[in-house]
Image (cartoon, rainbow, N blue to C red; front, side, top):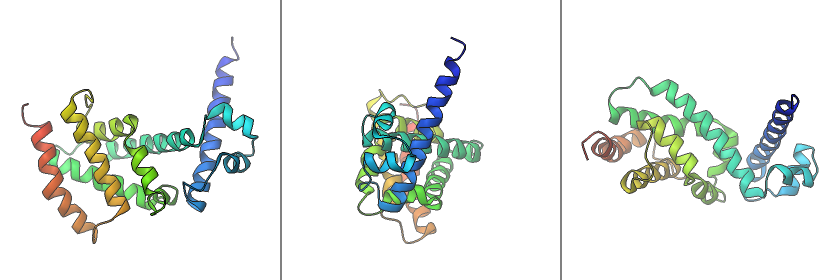
Length: 192
């Protein structure tokens, strides 16, 4: 029993190594072009070992997106938690998320034309939505239909800015301030 923690730690490290190898391949070749055999080879493991950790390439993709979403959310939470105005916080957090993704070659690769559909589908996963929404306006009850739709919409707005950027940073900020911030403040600040 005393060695169980080591087995778990080793499994976590192996899974991280696989995800890291997959991330590099996604950036080099495109998300859609990378298969399980490619990932196994890049990670230096057999396909059997790879399948021990991940059922298929979708689960590898999802694991990468969840890991990076948690990392970005932690960064955004640290940077924007003290902004009291909900409208200002939403704009800053969304622009911060876009900035984080654009600055990282392993992440922006997901928004190339051939891969943006995959990114869009994965972005609608509840873990991704909950993480982003919680950073912007605290814990969100996704069983509330209106709030769940709004959280999914916010994620889609971020994906849209990454897939089809505005003219420049000022244009993107203006769109968020004019169209997104009022909806968020009305829904999450005003009494229901």
